[in-house]
Image (tube, rainbow, N blue to C red; front, side, top):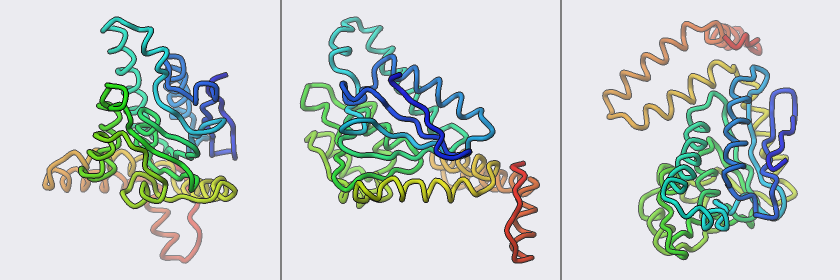
Length: 257
């Protein structure tokens, strides 16, 4: 299989891009497989956190250029880029937190995938780039995700030069949360995943949805919307349990509802 699923624990799942011979390219097949997998995991009540990573030398080099070159027709190009956009939107709008675990290169749509995830951690030798300008194809769809995570000047430099950036700088500009040695990356990523998995499913779902929606709103509308969502959250059993547990100095027992 080009995309593998591995259960790390009963509530943490690893999604592994498993086509190292194409540097885990986001081909039609792989995009369709990822969309199906994320849809399945989103509806699995036992899954609380999803970690996505790449097999072989790196995370993902983006679209398969041999496949792109073979398409030729405008309709097929549009279908590919629409499909890629569908995956990225699905990750952002999904109920479960998604963590990118990156090593090697995350280029073009691969960099877009990293930016679309809720959290991202990498090895200290990882590289990130939007290099389309080097082959006459501006990284317009990747910049949608990346430009929502980093500032404009940093984004434009990546887009206009096509030059890769290192993990240290990627952290400084907000593309990733942190970076570690290869030997520590797994441990650190799953430490964060376990911490998130220990929270109320319902609270995390409401919070993730609210976070992304309010970002696109003007200030007053954002406050009105988040006030409604906090009220909705407050009516949940888990909010009442969490507050009681805090006041009673005990661990909460989540019902996830």
